[in-house]
Image (cartoon, rainbow, N blue to C red; front, side, top):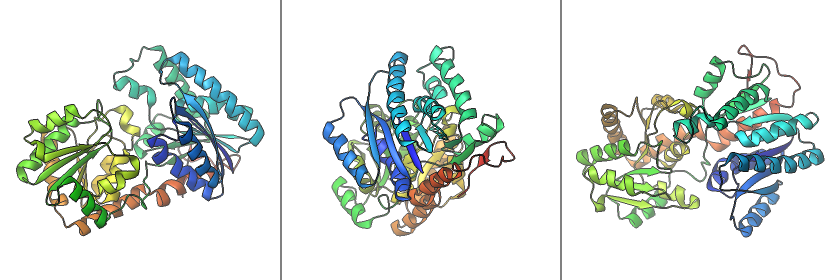
Length: 420
């Protein structure tokens, strides 16, 4: 099949490198012809784009980048959509893709028009979450703003119109079903954020090197990696670390983020950790697998709200694949389902103090298990739920193949679930 993939996020960015390209390369290796139209960040170095183009050409893929403005004004996004539409339509008329595959909302608006004008092209909407509600719950918009109203109106249209849809969680699939949001012939596939398990894996040698570099050979290392701020339970994670420190004096906290960690470090100090009990590192994506092997326990606590119904935190998959048990909370995507793997996952019901303390108590024996035994168990969970090769790419491929047919058989829910 020929597919035109449209993304407002750049392929040179870390998320594009980890959560877009591996899937598309897997589809290309399976025989699909992929052309990528992405918006790279303003200021991206030309040599980075040239290097990526050469890499993708070697994979038999085509790469058509545009430039993304740092501005979030509606007029700017409308202008970028117009540029994307012109470029995408030119590609579509020349290549006649079978699938126009859009990642998130703005590309979906472009893909909607392109698929409508392209003979026999199917529209595939890769929904990465409920964007308008995320802006509202994150404090950036209110529900009476024009942008929110326009986005929700478009959302209702695209859910009904799209031929195929990818969501990250079964929780969002259930919500779409319960609220009759999908079209009568829409194919749906649930694909969580997956990891390349050839990169993220238990590695005793890498673990020894990383722990020696950090000076934590005999410590119990608790890890948090990734974004900070509004959604993320920094206070609650600091409480877990503090509780562990009181129960296990050898506890050490490793914070991996390129953002400002000042607030998080102050919270950790308030829980009784001294400067010798924690470290912060800004780690390049290429180095993250080896750094994570240093850990004994991974944290991912996120404020539960409606927009997080569709979220699949990549860090959880990375922790498990790297050999770490995790502490997570319900109310965020399908994280509650990990309670079915109590040998690797401590799942708490809320971010209340009692549940946070319970999470620390559940996590401590998991973190103290012998490394080989523990890592084997967590890797098995990651492979079952989050493997790029065994979950992510096969599910995308199955959805692509299902779009070959003109009209799928309507399922009992109106839409059609795609199975591998």
